[in-house]
Length: 91
Image (cartoon, rainbow, N blue to C red; front, side, top):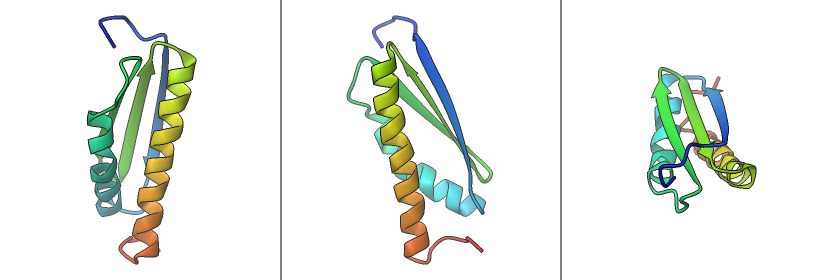
């Protein structure tokens, strides 16, 4: 973010039925987090056990909202795909 401190920050935590599901979802969104195409914001993701944590930091609320919407949709899409394909450990 060009050395400027973020003005807005959000943290999202998603719990999955299993560590395997969480890891699969995390691996699917990680490339996007590593290649965020803006200098106004950044995203970091973490996976521990059955939990995926996404941290979004931005220089303004517009960038925060945009990245938040994108990453929450990526997360939901990845998990829904696992479920639809029967690859989830969802009970």
